Amino acid sequence: MPDGELLFSAVPGPLPTISDVLAARARITGRVVRTPLLHRTIDGRDVWFKAEVLQRTGSFKIRGALNFILSLDEEVRRKGVVAYSSGNHAQGVAAAAADCGIPATIVMPADAPKIKLDNTKGYGAKVVPYDRATGDREAIAAKIAADSGGSLVPPYDHALTIAGQGVLGLELLEDLEAAGVMEADVVVPASGGGLVAGIALAVETHGPRLRVLCAEPETHDDHRQSLEAGRRVQVFPPAPSICDALLQPIPGELTFEINRQRLAGGVVASDAEVLTAMRYAFEELKLVVEPGGAIGLAAQLAGRVPGTGPTVVVLSGGNVDPALMKKAIG
Image: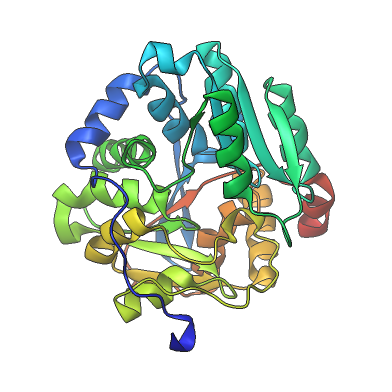
């Protein structure tokens, strides 16, 4: 297959709908934080920030994890859950499992940021390390689930996970309307695509007034390439980036089926621009934002978000290694 393109394959499971997002909100309300929407003016443009760095576990991932786990039959849930993640999904699943009083086993790369490894263990989960370069995390997690009888919690490519992330989009709609903002570009970090898919589902009732764009590292712009090609495109060979949470080389099947119909496009930023964005968030917003969580802000500061109207930037996570944060704020 030329140019790294992959033909679109069968969608793994049913597509979620806005009804699923509303059901997810009813299910997880009271267990997650309704994070604030902050405002600044950047180069004369109104920019709103969804500060999901203030969420439990420091990222949006607990929303989808909780919705998935709470949807399990009680007898199935008692057997525990298994997940694979470089950090934020790991912490979300670990915390959600602790909430439900069930065991969790998380397959994590051995080189994941120490803060994410420590936090995952701190929520009570068992961590199984693997070599990112040679190991198959999905196969490892699938074997653990098969041996233990536990349920595998998908990081992004499942209707329940996507619907849980979409609750963030419902909050955005309500807070923007309260602020009198009826039209905006919504810039969302993308790796597997679950967050941006959930938000796109939640805001689609507002049609063209809210245009959703994905944001990615310039070396991992598989979503942008896929949207332009009309099919899933894999970034190959993978290139390094400080955005450790955004290194999935190809969009999810389910998430891409949602996003290809709803997203207005994609924007990118370099690692240097991400460091600048992290410093901006620290100095101007008084927030600690991890590289992957700052990618949309980086694109905004670099002038890559099209148009001149209001922008909403989702700051999706704040679990950054202290040494890297020190480098960013210099």
